[in-house]
Length: 212
Image 1 (cartoon, rainbow, N blue to C red):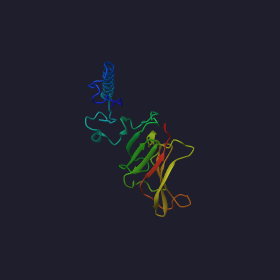
Image 2 (spheres, helix red, strand yellow):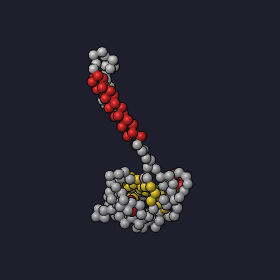
Image 3 (tube, helix red, strand yellow):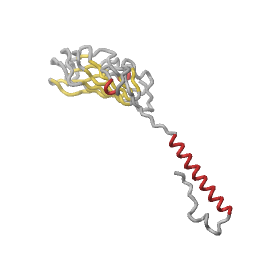
Image 4 (cartoon, rainbow, N blue to C red):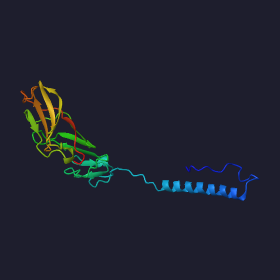
C-alpha cells in the first residue's frame, strides 16, 4: 500500500483551514490514489509461470502417464536421452535430470538403474540386486551413462562407492569417466575378489562439473 499518510479527519471542515490548506489536502489524496493505482497496475501485470512439462514424446496426457523407459526428463522440458545437457546447464539455476536405463554389457537383460541429477549432484541406484556374469569386475561398457551423469574429471578417475561386503569381499559400484557403470569385488587389500559373484545392489553418488 502507499506509504503516504492521508489528511487527518476533520481538517477540510475546520473553520480555520484556508483554501490553500484545503488544496494541499486534496493534492495529498490525489497522490495517494495515484500510488495505489500504480501498485495495482504492477500486480495485474505480474505473470506467474509454471515450470512444468505437460507432455512427452507427443503424448496428450500428463507427464506421469506418458514418460517412457528411455526418456530423459529435465525440469521444464524434455530432452533426448542420448544427449541432454549439451553444455546448456546453467550453474546459477536449479537443473533436474532423470533417466531409467536398462543395464547392458556383462549384466543380465531386463534389469534397470535410475539415474538422477539435481544441480551438480548425480545419484545412481539399481532396482534390487542386478545379476551378471560371474567375475570380480563387470561393466555395462562405455557410453552407458548419459553425458550429464558422467564423472568429467578423468584426472581424478572414476566415482566409486562401497555398498557393503559380499562373501568376505567388498562390493563397489563404479561410475566411470568413459560413461560406463561397473561393479567391482575386491578383497580388503584391494586385490581382485577371490570368490564368484553373481550380483549386488548398485548405489553411487558424486558431484560433476557445473557445465557438463
